Length: 185
Image (tube, rainbow, N blue to C red; front, side):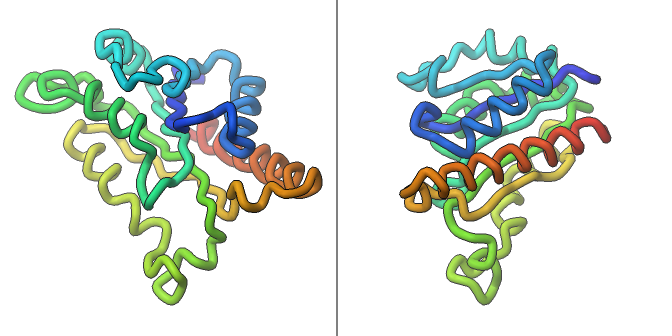
């Protein structure tokens, strides 16, 4: 398999069930992949740009793993992108270091999928929240390879041991779908 870099953008992975389970499953099933937990490395949001750019140079496939917060990635993942995807590195006349690399989005939502539609409470389908990532790929000459997502994974639905186990099961299934996508690339 190619070099896979998984960037965890959860702001508090220790308190997570879904994202934590997804990452544990990926780590177990893809031990050769590099897993970066931004909340542990950069709790102060001071990104080591050189170190992170070296990881990007190594990677063939980049997976952004995160919970959807306010219809976007959490602030720490946004900060990581702002710092590492710099002009002259990822784009611009000399910025071609990400050219040809593949990007996959892997995320969870608290709201159920039925709410992500024109008729639902969100007013938009899930894919309508993703154009900024597709634009990043276009600018940096990466290949957008799609998304894997699981809806209805919220803190409010973790009130009993049975509900927690349901979230863990859904999260393992999410990781398995992501692994199938990675294997197909």
